[in-house]
Amino acid sequence: MAQGAIGTPAMSANQPSVNGRAYPNGNPELGYNPPGVRNTDSAIPLHRDRPVAHDYACDGPAPGSLSFRWTYGSNVAAKNRDPRVQVVQYNEDTFVLRQNVCVHWEAPFTYLLFGNKGALLIDVGATAAADHYPLRQTVDAIIARWGKARGRSRVPLTIAMTSGEDVAQNQGLVQFAGRPDTTIVPKPLELMKRYYGLQNSWPSGTGRIDLGDRVIEVIPSPGTHKDGVTFYDPYCDFLFTGDLLFPGKINIGNDRDFVTSLDRLKAFASTNSVKWVLGGHIEMMFVPGKYYPRFFTYKPYERVLEMVPALIDEALKYAREVQGKDMMLIRPDFVLFNGVSPDQRTTVWPDGVPNINAFRPF
Image (cartoon, rainbow, N blue to C red):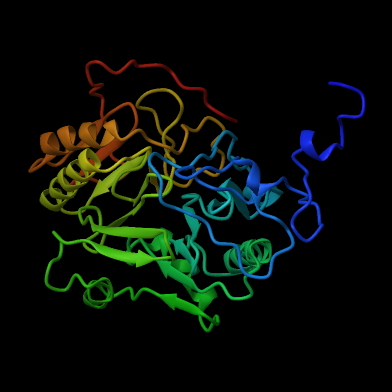
């Protein structure tokens, strides 16, 4: 570059605005965000006279990353010093939170999504006590920071659950009692149906949660729980499936409903872009078919959280195989339990699944 070019307005992205101020984060007039491309805050001037609004309408999934390792607990839970709630920002409007496995062995995931008019918290974890599991404090801090960055003093929050029956995903709800500007989707099944407008179309209809240009679809998906729902985010192209489908031990409550719900999700994924299926837990190890038993608080060899949409088809195939039978069935990425205890064991190893001895942590 020629001497003197640095700092020259014609050669720099840091050009002055019409009022003479430089854009600290780049000049939005330079075309970094042409029509049809998802915009990011990095091209929005810090000096603004109105709240920042994002364009959530675009083909393909929004960029983001889950390239990290979850905290994995300790043999002696009382000695664990990891954060009680691990927070990962997938992108500017999408956060993944996980409860510390030493606070509760199921280590459930919750998801916080933002739109131009508000936020949605999907699931609330397995522990009510804020001293042990400071979910509300964590969510409030994320919302406050996000609102400040967007120039928004008010960010209404909606709280919804993949299942109000699921004890591992509804205990933290009490922390949000009385929280201002907060809507909690009712837990009782009939009230929940009414909230989503599904009282006359359950389980074949769909509901909606409008966050402001980011509309989350609500898909009834009973099977592990009679009130189960799946949420679809068309911005990141995620399906949030809770207990219905996750990398772990799936305890089927009603096998007919389970098959029907997976069939519905398969049809949905065939007509909508799905990047990943994100469930409520991780119980599988990184080797095929091996999983952690219940109550373990040390899980250093976990499988990744995200599941490819093709696993919906695989789950449906094997759900049909166990339907009407009391049995467990091992697959590389999940294990189905139908009519048997979640502690059931089997000496039958399935064909086509490598039987690798997993590491045993001590």
